[in-house]
Length: 114
Length: 113
Image 1 (tube, rainbow over the protein chains, first blue to last red):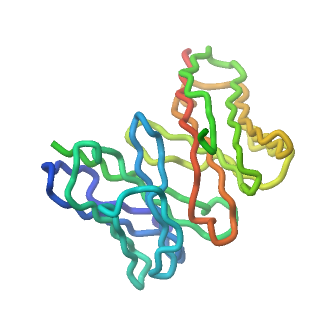
Image 2: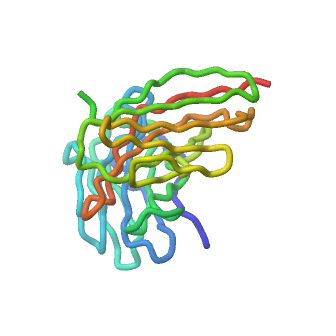
């Protein structure tokens, strides 16, 4: 079974630009969550999508948004990029019950804002 | 106060040592407790999960949860250089919030030969 796939792996963007990141979950997983990881703040929850609806949301500004498609693939968008948005963005897909497929992470997209 | 507190270390031990990693949490609504291992430039990998107080063992790894004290631990026996990584505790309230994990800061572990 294929794991969680995130594309692209690396991105360099300029301040003020916008960026879209993609996440393909494990087949059969309907929940996709996004996280931001930085050295200072650690791993922080951005939002979760379930069946094309945002179900949970973290404490991030409205510049961070996402969506989920009918095949459960998800995209995350950051508008008006700031230097502080430089981070590793991780997505995880999950089944509802604890087990080995509970919150399986992709390898992430490393975003650098210059 | 953060919802989950984890000593960031770093922790350096000799090969074969027993390693103890710990987290405390503040919200008694949390029901599921996980430990992830993250190697450099990789996503976190699930090591252990549990949802009740007590111990759970898997090979060299033991996860311990004490809900009354809001304290979780991961023990690594006979540590190996390949265990060198960042270890993250994560907790979850379950139900319709199962898609949201709250992480500790992570502990950087180095096991030297």
